[in-house]
Length: 340
Ligand code: PHE
Image (tube, rainbow, N blue to C red; front, side):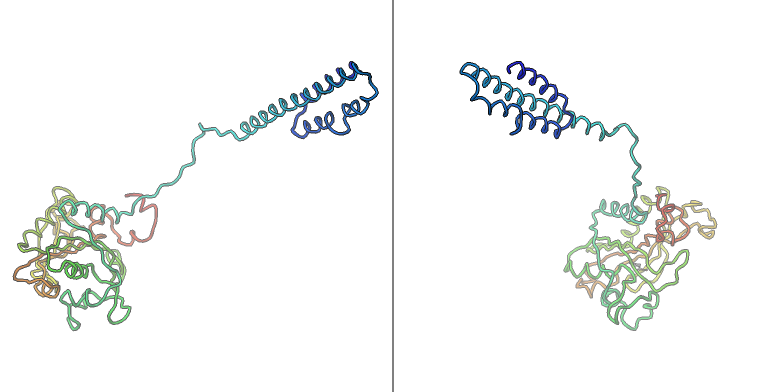
């Protein structure tokens, strides 16, 4: 009986060690420790053995059981380890493989121009402000010294929402809004943003474009301050050799008013097809803030003076990069946009 038990032990041990899966292991365990196992069978015959024999067989059966438990646990650990190893192998990632290229976008060239100009103006102590694109007639025209029947309204026809509300035709209404907010104190702001005009679209015109407005109001502001400011701006934007000139012009909200030209970046002022032989290219409008505009916004024009200007952002970007068609900015063609 004892020899049989020992023999069985060896077979059991081998079976456990050969089990390939948790399921197989459980089956083997059940075979030896379950209700119908040979050990159970021996136990049920214990009564038939005499004292010493009974004791010895009981002991051997217990050892057998413990051995099975122990071996099963050992094998279980092993199977789990093998499982993890197999998984690691099958899911292995080769970190040395080259990665997939993720195409990176970039800022729009107009955004870059705005950011560049903002940086220059912030360096000169300006604040950057914003205003609404859907604007009241009051700010777009009335407070800019363009009353209802003023003929200069024709210069900037617009898209009207109703008789009093329109898409702003320029960023100048932000001047009025800023002055009302400042309640009589000095001002130094720029305002970049979209503007809209009922215009035909061609290589140099678009029904929607962008401007950067500037406004300075203080007690001792002169036209020469405007010239110095714009001169510095253009040198930084278009190069140290860039010069500017003022030409008399007319805007209802500035007096005197000027059109500002820069030396042609292509020929340096000698004259070429781009500047139509003149050596100069027009880039913006500006002037001394009209006394009526100051008065309407609560400033005493005998005490306060100011200058204002409006720069076409597309215009200056076209000059800077030699872009010949304004429509390129809006058609979202990556072949164009990637170049900047
Ligand atoms: N608002 C003018 C325009 O759109 C430009 C301008 C701004 C002129 C400020 C003078 C002063 O044409």
